[in-house]
Image (cartoon, rainbow, N blue to C red; front, side, top):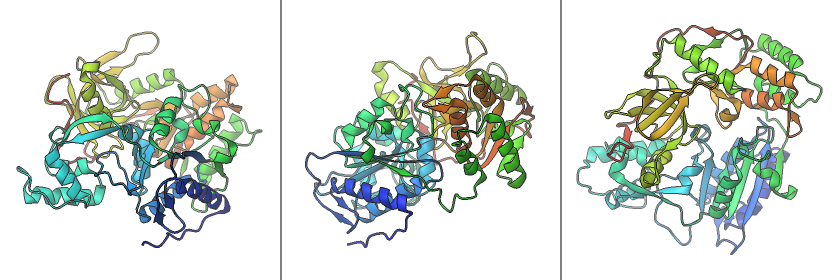
Length: 510
């Protein structure tokens, strides 16, 4: 038996830990003694741990995951599941977007997207043997066409990434070689941890409750509610006793000027102009905050400018493309894109699931790598995805100002659709983080002047809170409507590439 993980928490974290531990006992997991037991029959539990940036939500989630793993709980990644065992307990750690999941993975937490749990892959039986061997539940297989060297490459990849598809790609296989299809999950799991739950809509929440008898939501009540929601966040519908709030800002985040600015927004007497003065004062003291006189076009290629309105977004995208001399009728390698959904008829449902399961869900951030081998296809790098480089039929739309129709520099007849990603709205940026974030302050000033209120808070404050907390290391508060010239051409050599891009066409143009 493994010894329980020893942890020191603040009072509010300890209270939240105890509440989650009580809920986990219903799923047959005793964290106090690191024991697995039969789950309580017919019992279900939903609770939430909420708190603002820096309050320790992610640290608590990571410690809970480690304690569950130490207790022998199976971690379900979404890319492959081993054979069912009667006595096992399962945990999946989920986020609404690839980027949000990658933030957790970068901190050592094996997170995946909600979509990857709702739809599970069906493996070719031969390659299922490889997956079982990689996961430690089978002998090293003898597979025709896979050499010892290829299997060793797969094993080395799995040891680093814990991803079966990435390991098989390292062995020289394409997704269509080992995944024969996708199916809607039929069997429930035990425990679900959902990060960035402020982004969940009612339908996603309902789907998750069908899968997980024990569900723990982690979220920030100061963020913006989902665009398609009726105005609230799903954890606001829970009974008060099922919600644990983290109030304290922890030592590792204390003195962070970005978080100091975020928490200052809670002052009801603070107006936009006094807040901007606080930004200027923080910039004089700390290089992690910059009062920028212009937008940096170099940063826009990997970290979109955050804006309030679509009008500003479209204007900045056109300025970015003009700065790089991008032609009207084609894309340059290295241009950023945002997935806007998938346009495929029902008869191509498998291909839709292939695309979505590999990361091309609505809102995914993508970099264009160049044309594919077939007309209408493009090679893409999906930011935050575990196997990032794919080739897919694509429709790219560059929006125009006003009522003018978008022009389409690159298009298949149908497939994954994309908008340009050099600038995004603050609503769309939720769940993502970047090393450096540029916030277009003139847009937020307009929101402040309009005096709009959302969920009892001035809209400009909620926009500002979400925007500045997207920054991991540096916040650039852009105060003027100007764009700096790029320092060079767009590039793609900084993007990590697997052994071979995954071809997601199913062999046919769609």
